[in-house]
Amino acid sequence: MRAAGTAMLWQAFQMGGVKALYMIRLLVLAILLRPADFGLIAIALAATGFLLNLTNLGLIPAVVQADNMDDARYDAVWTFDVTRSVIITAMTILLAPLIAKIFAEPHAVPIIQVLALRPLIESLMSIKVAALNRNLTFRPVAMLKIVEAIFNAIISVALAKLLGVWALVLGMIGGAASMVIASYILAPYHPRISYDWQAVRPLLKFGSWLLFTGIFAMAGNFGLRLVISRQVGAEGLGLYFLAAQLAFLPNEVASEVVGTVAFPLFARLQSHLQQAARAFQAILTGLMALLYPICALMIVLSPVLVQNVLGAKWEGTVLLIQILSLGAMIALLSDATVPLVKGFGQSYRVTQIELAQSSSLILMAWFFTNRYGALGAALGWLPAIICVQILCLYFIQDIFHNSLKDVRKPLLAILVATVAGAAISYLVIRVLPNILGLALASLLAALAIVSILWFSDYRYSLGLLRNIAIAFPQMASILKIRNPEIN
Image (cartoon, rainbow, N blue to C red; front, side, top):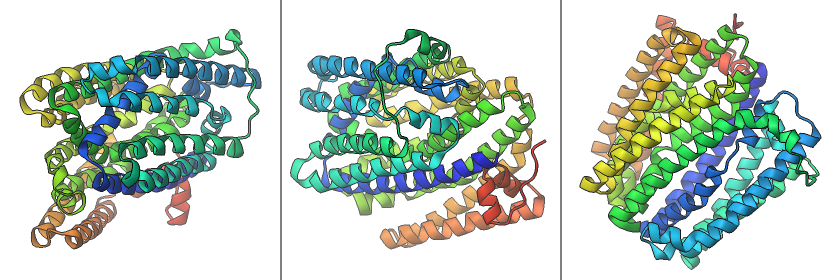
């Protein structure tokens, strides 16, 4: 568990730096660009990701999960992944006019074609980065993400006034290229072309289910953006896209930290159910304590954020952000469950999760968007997410039987702290509905939340600090928290 704790610290460093840069970049670009620009980018990202996910054999995650990797397998996996990306890039460029026509947005054609280069560039990254993930060596991995975020932000912001939507495109391309270059410095590897089918065949059993997972996930993403674009146009899609980027930032943190670290951790603990259950409880509780208050503050503070930072052109995002932030809170359980079942070699269950979410999301979004426009797309998330959480509860029960029993009391304390923090922030912005009020509300709410959680843990022995010691051993030693054994 010590290696996992160190990895999580580096992952937290990465996520803190990357998401801070991403948030600044997003807010600055929202001020400089139009909602329609974000809509065009949303279409292009859906288009470039569709064929990529349609052919994703899950070889890279399979490398992380596999026990016996050698240079021959690394070379073969790298070769197959690059070859697939070359084919997908060419097909996306050729099909760009048809894709834009489907979305009823002809201006998206050149953007789709240029962004099609991004997955090809990313596929050139050193395959030894997967070995770093496997070994929980996250310092260089964190550096890679930071490098990408810095170059993406600098290029996008610097060119926004001059090039408009193309600044976003060039920022993404530049960020991907910088990460590839840095990968060979931080994870040295000399790639060799190798079409050794026998070397990759053992990895396909694990990866085949991830192929279906990618298809269903991309179908949901593609279908949702298609529905919005055809119903309300690029501008409405841009409003939804920005709102989703802001609201789902906490979920992205959960997916990155839990997925990247917990996946290899649970892969190592497959034969130690009690230790795996304790690790799952600790990770889930820690994420709830961090992310529930953030989502709640996003719900309360989004009107002031939009009005005083983004401007009048983004007023339509307020209710979208609030609904999607609520959905992000509900979805936290599934964010923790996905790496658990993947680590236990049950990747077919990830496919089932994506199928349930994507199918219900498209149906609900079509129904609500037809009546409420872009707002309907946000409303469609709620029943889809609830459906997935029920499925995840079944999977957790099947693996651990009673793994969530000890989460109930800490969860109650977290909810109390979250509500108190949200109430305090609401009162502050009622008095000071401006940037100063936004900052003061966030500060006072954070102080209240931390105080309530500390008092609850001290008074009722909820085990919150103990879970921190289990999930983050390095942080536990810094804070002088006793790290109990996991028996």
